Image (cartoon, rainbow over all chains, first blue to last red; front, side):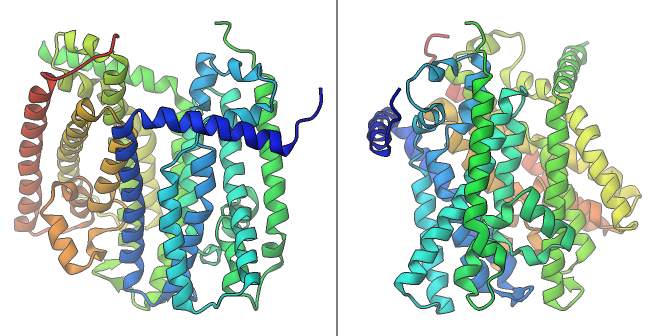
Length: 267
Length: 267
C-alpha cells in the first residue's frame, strides 16, 4: 500500500475535527460548564501561586516574575496534550469494553486516527491564560523581543509539549497490559503540576530522577532557561528538543506495541 | 438490626477495594512523590524567607499539615459527583432509587468500605512516616481523639457538598465541568493546597466564614495544636458541627426537590 503523505493526514484531521466539534456543540450546556470549570482551574492555580510567592522575595535565586514565567510557560506547553491528545483518557474504557477494535480496522495510522477523534476545545482557555501570564512576566522581566527569541520560544515550547505528550501516551498505553490504569494516567497528570518549579530546589538525587526518569524538568525548566537565562544555558537545554523527540518516539512505539497485541474482547 | 444492613455495604466496599490493590499502590507512590516535591519546595521557601517561623508556622508544621492534608484528601475523596452523574446518565439511578434505602444513605455507606481500606493503606502509613520524619513534632495525646471527631465531621461535610454538587448534575447533565469546579474550590478554600495561615488577612477572614475550611483546616489545626485552649477547640468543633447540620439539611432538601424533575433516558 502506498504511504500516505502529510497532506492526506491533515485533510483527514480537518474532517474528523469538524465532526467532533459538531457533536460537542450539541451538548452546549456541558461545553459551557466545562469551559468555566477549566477557567476555574487556571484561576485557582494562579491564586495558589500568588498566595505562595507574594510574601517571599523569591526562591532559590528565582524572582517572582521568573517563577511566573515558568508557570506561564508550563501552561502553554501543556495545551497540546490537553487539546489534541485528550482521547488518551478514554483509551482505558475503549480497551476494556472492546470498542477499541474498531480503530484497528481503519486503513490509516492507528495512533493518528485514535488521537484525532477528540479535540478538546476547553484547552484553548488555558492557552490564552498561559500566554497572558507569559507575556506579562516577559515584559516585567524586560526580556526584549527579537525574531530569534520568538523562534527559540516556539521551538522550546514544542519541545516541552512533546515531553508531556510522551509521558501521557506511555501512561495511557499501560491499559493494554493492566486493567486499572486510570491511577497511572492520573499520577502522570499530577506530575505536570510540579513542572512549574525550578529543578534547582531539589536535592541532586531528585534532580536526576526528575530529569531522566520522570522528565518533568523538560516541561518548563530546561526549555525556558534558553529564553530566561541566555547567558548560562546548560547543555541539557540545548539537547532538550532531541530528547523530547526521542521520548515521543519511544512513547509512540510503546503505545503502538500495546495496540498491536490487542485482541479485542470478542464482542 | 438497622446498622447491619449498612455494615453489609461497608463489607462489600472493602472487598471491592481490595480487588484493586494496584490502584492503592499507585496512590501511595503518587503521594510519596507529591510529598517529596512539597518538602523541597517549602524547604526552598523557608530558606529564602530567612526566618524559622512564617505566618506562625514552622517548616515541620507546614510539612505535617500538607502531608496529612493529602492523606486526608485520598481518604475522603469519594468521587460521589462522578458516581451520581454517571448513574443519571446511564439510567442506573432508577435501580438505586428503588432500593429499600434512601439514595443518599446508600451511596454513603457503599463508600464507607473504601474509608476503611484507605485509612489503613494510605492515611496510617503517611501519618506514621510523617510522625517519624519530623521527630515527634506531632503531639500524641488527647488531640488525636479530637482529631478523629473532627475528621468524622469533615467527612460528613465533604459528603454533603459532594452530594449537593452531584444533584446539580440532574439539571446540567454535565459531570466533568461541575466536578472540576467543586474540586478546585474545595481544595483551595479548605486550605488543602496551602495552609490557611498563609492566606492574606482579608481573604482568610472571608474563607473562614465558608464551610470548606471545616474539611481540611479544622481537623489539621486541631491535630497540630498540642495544648489547645478549651475555648478555641470548642469553637472549631462547634463551627464544624454547625456546618455538618446545615450542609446535611441543604443536601437532603435539594435532593428531594430535584428528584421530582429527574429525566432518565432509557436505562
